[in-house]
Length: 333
Image (cartoon, rainbow, N blue to C red):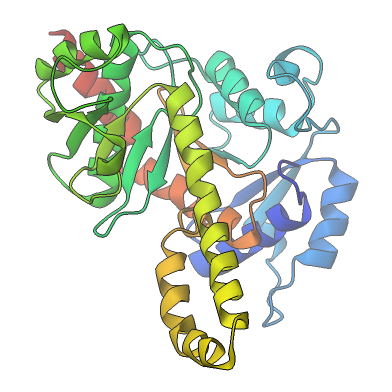
């Protein structure tokens, strides 16, 4: 029931994932049962007429709905029969292997932390965001889960981000940078200066302080910052594709010649902008909880939901949590 276009987009995306997966997994839908069955009937058919068979999915009745205006603690205090609460309890109890939601991010974060618990050695779970670069996407972490971070938290974000990127991209030693106001070791606030010292001793492939212009350079795999800065960067980045689209349309309308040039350039621009489309990545992981939780954008399309499900599947198979736990143990030692 999460997201601006739920449950239609969620159901449609789940059906697409089931169709493309070819039986690799089943999907469990949490929400008001009558509403979900009606949505499957109306939205479940793919363009080719394919409809998932009943043995590919199941429905668990969760009559309460957490909306974007509910407090982060709603799943724990006032709406314990919501899809977020019921789904995370089933994940904790081993009835499902991962939990995917495009719903209220604060509610998912709060409920996942308290229902699933944190990995041993993690002070605060974190959310990462994938930023496009000329090479491979760079993971920006934290992207909004934690607004007041201690140096130890930034170290944990770096470790979790490095392991996640390494697993997902099959690279042995991801390059990590600490976001600051200058490359020199003397630049930064108290938290970042102390975090720099911890990261120097961490054993990670640490590049030192980096600046905002370095995030999209393609030279870094992970950039670490607190969630206050990370979320501002993320929201600013989301505005860029819309800005370029508006400017392109204005240029195309300016003259017959500009219209012809825009027509020729249109396909190339579309391919470039595709890399900046959140739908391609689906969702982002909530790292540090004792489970697999993928959080999506509130405006997630069916395509984004489908890719969120595939990202959850990949996170399970690549044992990201186990690798994080092992790395933390080595760091403590």
